[in-house]
Length: 138
Image (cartoon, rainbow, N blue to C red; front, side, top):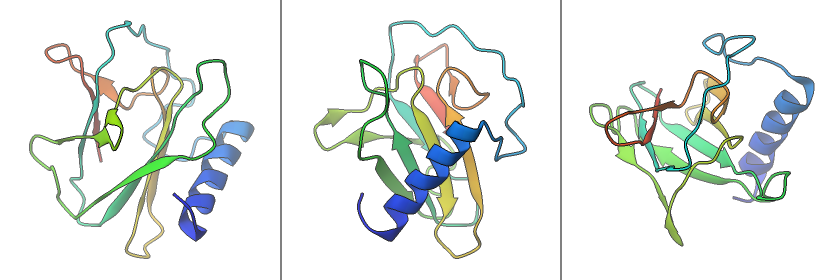
């Protein structure tokens, strides 16, 4: 993800993480960390808003730190509203790991955004017990 939007989103995520800011009122100020099993699965996303959205993932590296280039997916208004869409990567399936950061923002100029969500730390995304998938409903 290169260009103006990619670097702007990366800057927002890094500032929020670095300063410990809570950007979304739906994220608790002091979330309780949850146990994350090693049987990690993909991410299913539902856009229940009436806005086109971009979801950005900043993945943690195995040795610490974050990948240099985040990845993103775009969603039409209401896309995946009922059952969600299972996300993937060009090189294979997407697997979320504890500490990965997700942030979403509207593409319609309204300047709305959701997150940042830190996998395994914040209240979203959630794990389903049936499929062991992560779910993010926006």
